[in-house]
Amino acid sequence: MRLKDRVALVTGAAQGIGRAIAARLVADGAQVILADVNAAGAEAAAGEMGAAAAFGTDIADPQAVAALFEAVGARWGALDVLVNNAAIVPFIPWDEVDLAHWNRIIGVNLTGTFLMCRAATDQMRARGRAGRVINIASNTVFAGTPNMAAYVAAKAGVVGLTRALATELGPHGITVNAVSPGLIESDGVKASPHAQAFEFVEMLQAIKGRGQPEHVADVVAFLASDDARWMTGQLVNVDAGMIRH
Ligand SMILES: NC(=O)c1ccc[n+]([C@@H]2O[C@H](COP(=O)([O-])OP(=O)(O)OC[C@H]3O[C@@H](n4cnc5c(N)ncnc54)[C@H](O)[C@@H]3O)[C@@H](O)[C@H]2O)c1
Image 1 (cartoon, rainbow, N blue to C red):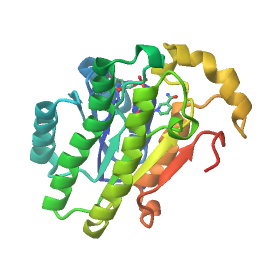
Image 2: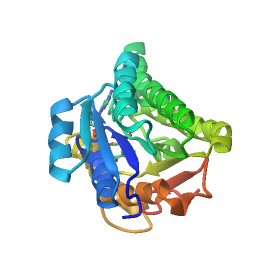
Image 3: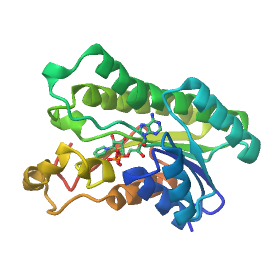
């Protein structure tokens, strides 16, 4: 119960890694808010895991994010923990990457993360509350994984944002860290061509097997806890040792 009475919000929590993170934070005693563009999925997941609330929110829509934090402010004042997990995980060769695709991926994966950080940390500071921001990046920023150019660029942006915010928010008691998972058998990956890469990725991993959402959730729970109080601006790689940076 190391997060007892903390208020935590996880984006993209209707399924996959976000859902596992939310469930793990509930198990650690936090009041957890699920936010996902899939409102029905978030509702169902929140009910099953005993979360505090669920919101249908598109993180790329500034008005939707403003409405979400109005509700958060009214009920809880401010978050203790924000986990920016929501993202689109595309599979699209470079020759098919056009401006519309680029704008969509950057809009959700990078600008959406910015909008959430902006609103959440403004509230934390107004309440004089220490806080934790945990951004889900990806080890594709090291590997330069094919068929994901806009995604890799957006995730590298998330890593840069993490480092810059850590510097500016540290004096306010807010830590900002990122986690970079390797290939994880999430709902999204299972339903995509990425699922065919497991054999190849396993060859590169120091620890053998398939990455599961819980492998990421356990590390996020640590970063959300007091045990990680002396860490900020870090990128923690959770990929069975595929990348050693
Ligand atoms: N699965 C992997 O192999 C892997 C590897 C590295 C990083 N990641 C990262 O982990 C995170 C979760 O990935 P996953 O595999 O569980 O994905 P997933 O596709 O299974 O789930 C993503 C969730 O995000 C939600 N979402 C998408 N766009 C949204 C928006 N605009 N606003 C709000 N919610 C939105 C979806 O509805 C869905 O519930 C992502 O940030 C992804 O980039 C995943």
